[in-house]
Length: 295
Image (spheres, rainbow, N blue to C red):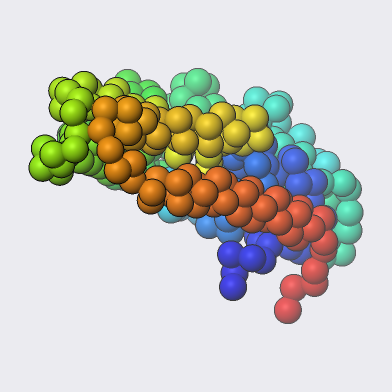
């Protein structure tokens, strides 16, 4: 039942939930998963060959595994050293000063994609070598299009994928395609309903026009960060779902009773999803605030 529990990452330190949420780049705490975070006992500034190799390995792993945030216990001196290398606001403060393994530290965060941005902007030869060691020949699907373009400009080769592979590995795009195909085909059974007196072309047009906002509504209802956006998603889903059936009912007989049941399910599921996310917000925040000793 891990989906009802908090997260383990960062549990050896007391953390500020909102700071971690911002660092991971998600809309709400409920969306944070352990796989988004890597907790490091230390992170040396990459100066020696060993330190550079370790840093390059961590950075590459983070892109390949889609890790969003590194959590590192840093002393004030270590934070200041990193702030001389990266932009000041790139070294996140994730919690209050506290004792950790016998020393006073400040839980700090680095965002791997911001680290790459900083190294590219600095443009130092050593930085370029470090980036090349980290990301050379990494799968382009593991980086954003923006990073792919930026890395290409500094002559760091990735394992490129063509645009079609990128498109058909995009789950949101596939959701739109599936709903659009379904909307194009579901008018066919109406051809065999003699009681329907309306225009099949009009019904088909309604299906096609409502397909995209219907899919947007479902995705927004489930994933949006703000409550008002989720409510807008719910209303959009219901309206666009009902539209073809309203036309069908007004131009024929035998209004499908299942539509009412489906609307009830949609509304109920919205409340269930919202309740679950509110619970996840609470348990994740509690997990981040609580400090547990490592075993």
